[in-house]
Figure 1 (spheres, rainbow, N blue to C red):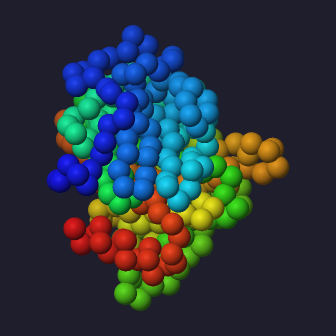
Figure 2 (figure 1 turned 180 degrees about the vertical axis):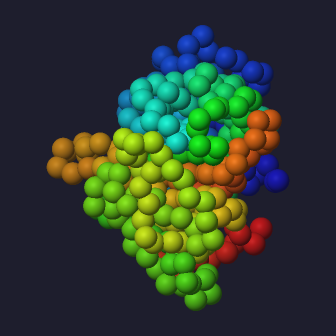
Length: 322
């Protein structure tokens, strides 16, 4: 990849592995990096808290701390929280507390891999025993490419035989809380759009791919975004949402085990207290999880000035055809 078209590291990070003494706490310069390419600039970090140019960032919200563009200086992500936040590992059991939010409470290391890439590495977690790596690459003109790979290191009994991985993006008070995707009976060349904005948290909140035949069962009392499904299905592996004059597009390499989720209030109250911040989320389902086997997904975040749906489809085609 041409260095002139890719990421510039504005805040130095160590080139060797550095583990913090505590999984959470206050970030140092080894716990986050500010990256810039083309029209966008962003911060990527681990589970440490941070006070920065876009406000106070809470501990546990790894991933994209904030994202800005030359076309929009306000970050689409709630300043306290994050985008592409690795939030849950889950199975059929009713988990509570730190176990339910295990990726947020476990040690996570940030490392510069090369001039283009930053990596978040999480060693084997306590409950689910999952080791993971997420790489982020920022490139012109307005792309953040990400790749997640995980390996379960031990068997979990009585969990239903599957593993779920869940990411959250908390959106900063958009006027339109909806995400948009293509209906199951349509294609990129013959699109039929679906608007998806759930009525309440944990209600009809997850959309499956049209070929996804995996039926998950949960213990009584498990009421979450991932345990409640919508009758809608999607056909192409992307969705978008609007933020001010911008569009935020999430597109994935094809994988029928990727699911989209939505909450109208997952990001808490707006700064003015007059509305709620939605969550635009996604998940990976591993139906028959095997110890020692690697699993993952690959995707791209596109953050650019809104130019209409034809432009969205053009960006999706560009990525899926690459």
